[in-house]
Length: 275
Image (cartoon, rainbow, N blue to C red; front, side, top):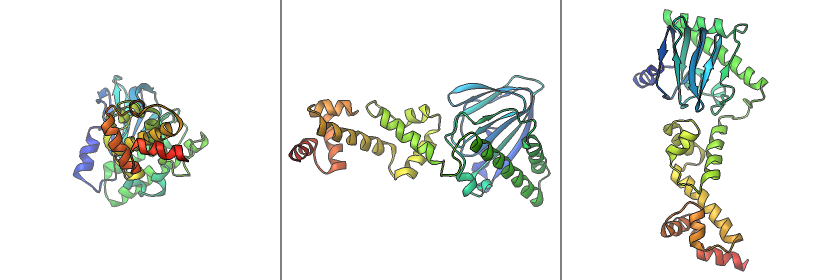
């Protein structure tokens, strides 16, 4: 199912959701896709990889996978039953519901002990409607997905997660925070994506949404801002500052600095000393 999601979305741009049941043993490799996913264990248990670690998904528990997050599921229980749901932003109307989903959420993506909640009934009904097809059943299935997310949002809100104020920005904040804390290292976008447990494509899209810059320009801008602070507050020479800010080529540092400030590091320092 998990490998099917990107293929389904690619073949049908209008696809909003799909749902399958799986019985017995199954395994997927670590992967990601543009749609979101729910893996619900109706019976038995499975091992899921998510947020850079392995977790046990017990009976009547589920894993919610935000878009672009690396994950996989491996079930070695021959008697296990699980329901897997894949859906896109379109299924959630592409507006307020979708924007409330905390896409960078990690610790609350595994939801346990669902036996006395509406979730099992909703997911079984969703699968039934998908199998029966037809326009009326498609609407009923979409209603099930929306009701599932109503439960999720209430659950996250009760745990103190901000689902009412553009929580999608939290992932963008995580990216910027990571760059600001690691700018002195030799960073690549692939390193950042791996550290944040998201795909490279998701990282690139978030960078564009955030400031219109690509990764390298954002990284260099962060490095130049730090260099400006050091030029203004320390006596370190240009080479030392370049190295400490992640530039291992002084000529490239000077060129990049001038691109963002309109002047060279030497002239910038001289101007600061006059003030």
